[in-house]
Image (cartoon, rainbow, N blue to C red; front, top):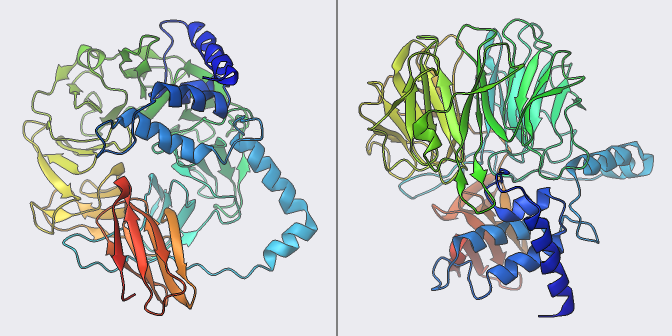
Length: 545
């Protein structure tokens, strides 16, 4: 071990020794170190030393899941730090981008660029028992009073709008840098005023510059008072607007719950600690519920997530976490309310602990029949909903979507991401991030997932409709081109297979169902020899194009 490594490890040890034993940490220690201001090189030296002899491959005898997760993080960040290894805040990058827009030479050069999107913008063709999707969506919102106008937000594909109920889509943030969207709120008194929570709070694929606002229906956007110049890890998972006073909004974040009463100009921190879900009680403008994420103490013991309640519009918050959640290993909790019974609450943690309350959280009952096979993949994908007119109709989302029609006494896989149509019900892409009932409906629900968005009747057992076509939201990990044919492209898409461009805007799956990672084409080969890869290092080859 050289002198530099020793000094780095000593510095890290000193940093960790100064932490209060009860201070809450995020899930991964490298993220914690990042939040504490350590450089990339210091973090990398510590983590590589800790995992010496370990492998990030699942098929290795020395496989370490933690090391695999770390290597994903390190691969993403290693080219995004400055020369000294400091993490550059997204607000700094955004401000640099604004400067470029004002540079007439650069803007003129950019305007003259001749780029055409190859997509995919329609679902790739697939001959397997399931079919591929387009890309992940985190959020969905409806224009107040007009359910045909729908807005969706993706983790790195920005904000999209449909005026046809989802049959066609238009991008609304192409005038911004590459932008993730975690939530969308539209002013119920003026639909031209909108707010977006930037970043990717679920997958951390894109950083956040805070909450942005538009006053012209999404044509242009500006930052609000909720932004953090020096924080590279800040995220805003969810927002909610006061039912009658549209200038009042609350937002959860990596630092706590923030509240504004002047339309986002200034914000006040009303609760500290990493928070996730937030909502008003059904029919109330004062009662609110929120959830706080869990973490680890200094000895790496799990600190469970919490359920919070406010009775004064979010100015102060009380901990109403039931014992079952307190004693669980849940790092994230989802909670739902219903107009069918304002006092009824349903919540579950990502370790499959579920609870209900019939008195607004004063007392709780543990749900003994929650499906043990339910999989939220850690804290990556969780969704929840209760039918507005029926508190016994419950929906939970993780890898698959599960439905209960009797208040949780029994459950069934309802939207299945891994089986063919009709087994047991029908296919909808896996990994759910948000459920939302169409305003005014007790039956029609929309599901945002890693393939896009589906719409269906939750009271029926009939196939749902895929509304994803037209969205340019695919997250490509890598791609390969043919040197002798500009129409041949092989690309790898996050959770949407390895796919091949076939010309005229169409794509076909060549390797799935997988996380497509990369593609390579032998550009000197007249027969177009090509390769495609997926996670865990598997790859396939074609010798006939």
